[in-house]
Image (cartoon, one colour):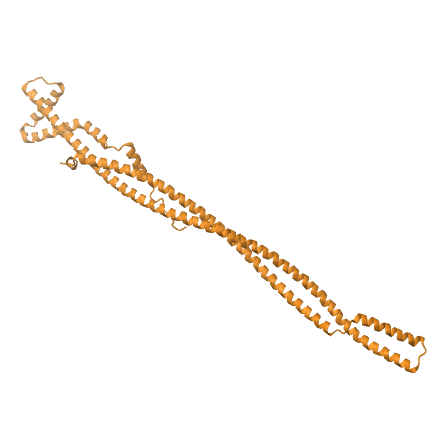
Length: 370
């Protein structure tokens, strides 16, 4: 007796019922897995968008800082130049103060006054009749004035030097003012870039926080997706195991059914042969088919009578051949059957099998680094 014959029908029905339950549950798990994957992809997309914003803001902050640092470098250079000008200006003023400290009187005023005095004395020499003492006195005074004028000439050189130093001081002050104005303008530009960095920083932190939150949600849904895929794998394994048992039962059932049909056909054919021979031997009326069968058996029996035992065996063989010929058509029909109608999967089950076969697992694989 085959295993199919030994398997109770109730057990097969239980397997089919369990298969339907597993497929229904697998269909629900599959839909839930798809929803989880959609949610996971949603958070992944959101995380990637936030990370893109973060990278853009980081680049903006970097550019603003680089520009600010470049301007600050120019400010430092301008301040150094301004300090050098101030040092040079201080040196000029120190030199002016030193020259002014050694100048006696006002060279221009004293010189004009003394030159008028010399002219007056020379005019007296030319126009007046002077005594020897007066003449000597005028000559001596003119000599003293001329000596003083020589000293006054030296003081005038100092005064000219002071004027030159003052002109240099004015140029240095103008240059220092220009450099100072440049420092102020550059400082304002630097402050603008610094304020832009300060303005961007809260946005950057906000996008970073949003990206971290989206990544955490993505990781959680990724975990759920992997768990769902594992459940679906287990369900698929159970479904395939039960389907294998049902297919094995159906195959064994078909084999047993075909064997039973062949046996019944052989018995029926043998009964027809025996009945035809009996009618022929008893002189009863036979149909044409019965006559042909009986005639063939009797003829074979007559030819093989000396070898009765062997003939009996050969008759069995001929009978088997006849039975097999008669059953050939039936066997061809049964061979074409893959399974009985009750063993065929329903449209829903076939659709689920296709979904389970085509549904990609591990679709949610992704880096968990934000």
